[in-house]
Each structure stands twice: as structure tokens, then as C-alpha cells.
Length: 448
Image 1 (cartoon, rainbow, N blue to C red):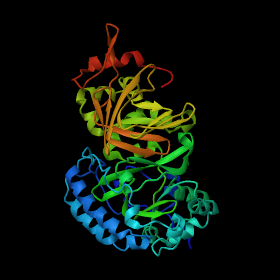
Image 2: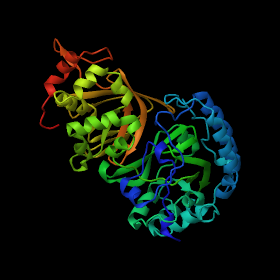
Image 3: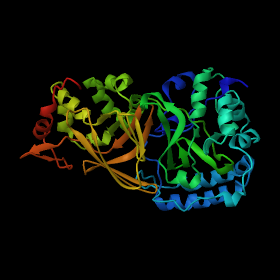
Image 4: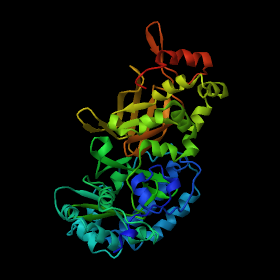
């Protein structure tokens, strides 16, 4: 098998999770769709529920015992998804509120499995190329045949591999193994759990997040249920004795750095990129030697527009540049990576999940003694993240190699002290003078 046919990427421009730059440079990327913004990805809750109920019931009937039986009907299910979602009105906050009653304990539909997840993949006519690739790594074969964990495998079909152009360069064996590990989780995620989960840990260790599991994101959008926005799940719940397999139509590529996400999506972040460049913060963010993971609350272009032309003109002037630097530093958290349903802390390194219900945490920013107050409400798939009691995260979990990007629709303004009491900005109109007053104590901090 030619290794030049191993790493495709579909729909780069529609993906919030963009492939790792090192891998991307080795592979010719095939783009299948375009999108002017990443914020138009999710249909209404009712449309999602009706479509998933219909398509997943077909998937369950198809996924009786083997991978082949599931994928034989994937094309039909995919056509139905495309038809229904194509007419949906996108709304990034209309997440499916709860699908906890869907596909928990599906073993009864399939009978008791008698093959490992590796055996199911190896014997399927749809995953011959994936099998050949896995066979290059005896430790992966041993793991997927063993009982050390109840694995979840997002298995690319042969068609996913066929998307690689003939002239694509040969990736290194090390990079190929990282790609494979990014398709595997040591935790058990049947379809029902995938539906109510925003991020999933994989076997790929994130060097820049304290060697904790690099995560995948799951999304419900115009193309149905996807992983990392671009890889569509086309078959669900193929159970083995040691885990479960879901078929996907595109290979999952490890994500890039936070800076790459910002710079490669100018339709959302061109103003933020300009500000980070003018203030010298861009190379600081890009230097992973001085932090272990991190969270960037990234204001969209629209968020800056809401400040008004006068404040923007001031911030991006030569005189206002030092104020802009302090303002942007208030959006950056080092050494603490806060996903919508997981939390990595560099001190120690502590990995913990975000519990269902309400969760509160204060995250220290690059501004001295100034933290962001974060409140997360998590109910099934519906997740709300509020900052300082006012600003909402509008697009969650931009998975990055060195942390996570959470998109906010309002620029975050530091609080001011009135009579010894901190008063948070709640979105009220600010004058240039008021903004300067709030930022003045932080102008010129050496550590920024």
C-alpha cells in the first residue's frame, strides 16, 4: 500500500478544528466545500432531534453484528441527512438539549459481540486501508485486540482514504501513528454518549497540553453528526467485545496551534489577529515553551464592531496600542485548558471533567491579579458558558494543539474598583475615556 494515500482532509474551510500544520504541510489538501463563517453550523433543536431520530434508527437496524452491515446502508442514511439538514436554518446556540435516552445499552439490538474491534475492522470490506495502516503498528493491533480498555474507534472507510490525491507526499511513520491514535479513545462512547458529549479524549498525547489526551469535538450541523466539524459519522454502534466502532467519511487530523486557528479563519478573527500582531502578543501565544496548554477567549470580528468605531479607532492607533495589549491579555489564560466538558490544569497536571449541572471556576489571565469568572451550565448536549456574568461563549471548543479556543461575541472588559468593590462590565456603552480608565492600571506590564 502506498503511504501517499493515507491522509486526506475534507472541508478544511468549514472546519473549526483545523489539521495540524506539520501534517498539513505534508499532505495535499482536498477541499470539498466552503463557508464564509464558522458560526453557521447548527440547525434548530427540533430539526436535529427529528433527523437524528430517523437516521439513527436506520443506523441501529443496519448495525446488527458487523461493520459491513452498518455501512451497506450508510449512503441511504447520508442522503436523508443531507436533504433534511440542507433546508435547516443554522443557529449556533440551538444545540440538542438532551439525547440521553438514545442508544444507551444497544447490545440488545446487536446480540452479544464475539469479535474484538480490531477483528471487526480487519474483516470488513469497507476498512481494508485502515486495517493495513493499523497493521504497521503491532502495539495498536495488540491494544485493539486486548481487554485493557473499552475502546471507541472512529473508523475511516476506504472512501475516506481515497480522497488523498495521487501526488500527496509521504508522511513520516511517527506522524501516521499520531493520526491513528487520534481516531481512538480508551473510553467507551456509544452513539447516545457521543450525542450528549462535546469533546472526547483520544489516545494521542498532547505534548503542548501536559501530555494529556488530545481531544476530538463532536458537532451537530448542516451535515448531520460530525467529528471536528468535517468528518461525518455514517455508521454507529458496531459493538465488539472490547469497545465500539463508529464509521466516519473523512480522516481525522490532529489539530493545529491556537494561533493557526485564529490566523486561518480571517472571516471570524481578522480583527483579533491584527490586534495580536500589533501588540506583539501573537508570538507570545505561539511560544509553547512558556505555558502548558491554555484557553483563549477569542472575540469575533462582530464583537469588536460592537465596541463602536471611536473605541476601535483609539485601540488600533499608535497611542492606543498599549491599551489594546492590556485588553487582549485579559482574554488569554495560560496553563489551564477549559473545554466545555473537561478541564486540564497544568499544576500537577490535573485532568478532570466538567460535571453535569452548574460549574464555576475563576481563570487567571495574563493581566496581573485579574481573573475571568466562568460559569458553565451543562445539561445533556445543551451547554452554556458565561463569562463575568455577562458575555456568552457562542462557539465552544475550538480544539487546538496547545489548548482550546472559545469564541465570544463580546469583547471582555476588565472590572473597575468602586469604593473597594469590583464592578464587572455588563455590556453597557463605554466611552473612550471610560475604557482608558479601566485599562490604565495594566498598561505597560512587563510580563505581557
